[in-house]
Amino acid sequence: MDFGLKKEHIDAINNVFNEYQNVEKVLIYGSRAKGTHKTGSDIDLVIAEKEISFSQMMEITNKLDDLLLPYKIDISQKSKISNSDLTDHINRVGKIFYQKNDKD
Image: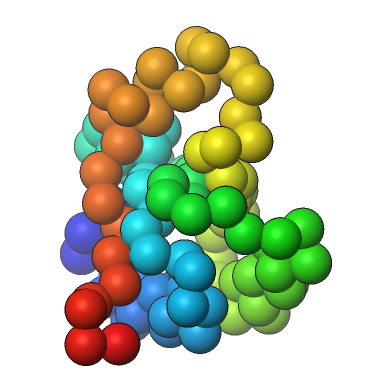
């Protein structure tokens, strides 16, 4: 398990990201990145590279929700975060959760 998540759950989430050409890198932050998560902790994810459209963000959110995983998934775009404390936290503790391969 990585970040306190089963491999099949990570793979399912990453398969959603892989459907979108402009989603190149996603970071995980918060308790799961720090290793302080508890059973049922949410998954905090941020799209770190290129900006995506609002409609694509909604599609991704809906597809992640449709996975029916036993976690709440919070996803955002780094470029849209205005809270500097949150951005600093992501920069400090964020770890790569998904990165598109060059061959994809």
